Image (tube, rainbow, N blue to C red; front, side, top):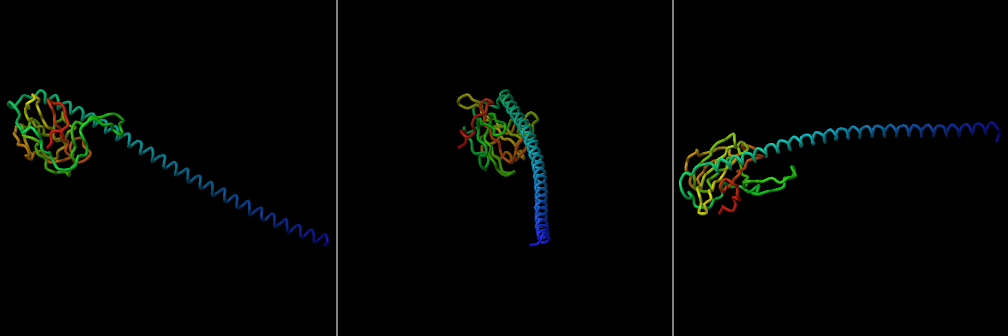
Length: 233
């Protein structure tokens, strides 16, 4: 092979190598550009998710504050009811009813009486009655006979919404019994009226501090809440 032929062959090989190197570098540059684009896209997505998470946290904090405020108002309303019942005079002597209660409305029990640990507040909260979930407008009846001592939407009981309280008199143990019907959509009785056990007194609603249509039902001894289900036959 002549020197000229050798030079041509070497030059051709070098050209091929340079072409391959250029292609390799071009591919690397394309890969780097793609990686940069992917990183930028992911950063944008993370930023968007971070903003969404912050918005969710802010909304939850706002809801928690609202719920704490409402719960505080409900507790205050309950104390006001206790004070009012203890200061009321009697309509007569003895007990006005049968000594047991009928179920005040249809529906299912959505919340029981008693103390419970709130999943959000992380503290124990007293629930002073039994909640019956039912569609708005469902009939509410008097659990037992007695006199209507509160009927309406009262500012001092604002957490309870439209509320009816019945005084059932003093039982054989010397305990004055009353019942409370809260969050009604409509009240069908007036203060001072005597009602019979099972008589329609109102409709289920979601007034006051309520998360949906239900009847909040309480039984009280001398103004203090007790478990209503122990009275219902």
